[in-house]
Image (cartoon, rainbow, N blue to C red; front, side, top):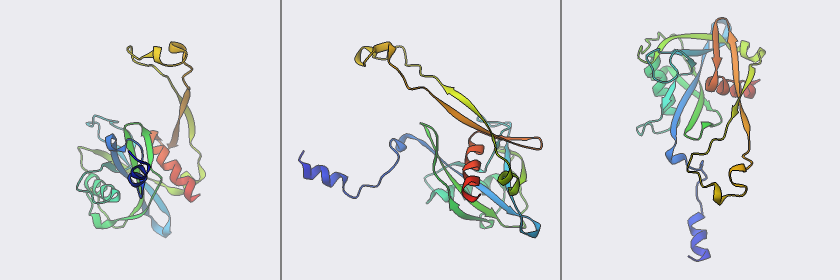
Length: 205
């Protein structure tokens, strides 16, 4: 292969996340609700206890991006409409937030949107147990508590230690993952939901 061939291969190439083809892609919505006198609240879901993943936890509406979704925001609107049982026309996207990669296998595209009143939720019981709202000013005035999860490197048994410097004594880089917790009345908002929420609050504060 000649240098010109390499240049042509790389020319005008879109920059993406490495390995994204094999990652599961999701879109979520931070739904803003306009209350009386113009104040804003954020709507949250409590996930159905029947779900295999994170049953009973607090989350934003959202789900897997399907091939039929023309844009990532279409998935956020569709999932919100299906989970809350409201018309798509009542959901307006305001803007997209930074892409969130919580694990090597998952990428999340968060959006901020508003749900136009009046709306009458008809929750999908297979996915949503209940919903509640929290005044936006609560998060603007409240810092989350932060706790850490230590990362532990455990190579598989057949890992080729003899091919790397220092073998089994290789100095793997250690690290820890911050986990945020918001406490509102009897509700605990944590994990990916709290991470995305905190990112949003940092932008608008």
